[in-house]
Image 1: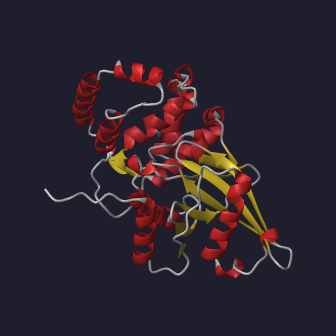
Image 2: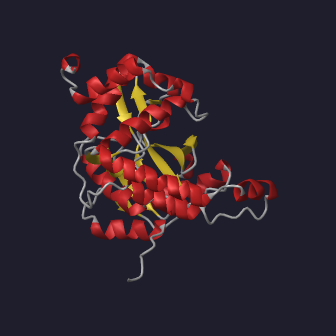
Amino acid sequence: MGAVKIWNEMEVAEEFSEKNCSTEIKSSSLTVDTSLSLPDMTPRVINLCKDLFKKWSKLDDSRFSVQTVSGGITNLLLKVTVRADDGNEDSVTVRLYGPNTDYVIDRERELQAIKYLSAAGFGAKLLGVFGNGMVQSFIIARTLEPSDMREPKLSAEIARQLHEFHQVEVPGSKEPQLWNDIFKFFKNASKLKFDDDDEKQEKYQKISFKEVHNEILELEELTGRVNSPVVFAHNDLLSGNIMVNDDEGKLYFIDFEYGSYNYRGYDIGNHFNEYGGYDCDYSLYPNKDEQYHFIRHYLQPDKPHEVR
């Protein structure tokens, strides 16, 4: 068995730049330290934007403003606004990968998918890649709250868009990646050490990874009986990855880090789980009527009431 190629973010950015012939997508070898405070990070972000986009390279730093949009486990999102000579403003989103996220996220797969999803009208346009992140167009919209997802009109639109999302063809293996990813997560989780936190280490040692492994195998076997269609799935359709422009009535899916070919039923079921929010309050899981409402609009977006 040959050696396995382990990608880091810098290599992915370089590889993507070499393979992509489009002059629209820029690349830079610069990185931005995500541990810095926003004031300390700002000049580095400005320097990055100047390096990526030559039209901004000679502008004074005072023309740039940088603000945090959101932060999470795997990303820090920054809005960079640039004021041109004529007074007009242009904004982009700088997305910084969290430290060590390459252990759980396949960045090469993500960048490959973004090209095709963007061409199909999903998410923000990819403008540039750099050592530990990417730059995308800025979406003028608000991020949903978990409670928004059960609002009938929004639920129907999410279902319609997910139906379209699942039609996108992305090159590469069409084998469902669910179990590959789960076993990868399991392998990493089973080797953790909390050297600086005795309390966490004590709790960790109580976990029976043999029992967890056996349950994963049982679930994998059960899944094989369902014969769910395999589609290119979002795999992380929580409220924070859905945005809406209320004035225009336009809804957006964002953040395709976990996107891969997967079971269609998993993508829908995972979305329903996200009704519970970050607190995982599964009493908020959609009831049967809410599930049927979603599935009708998913199966027949144009004629949902004909679904029986």
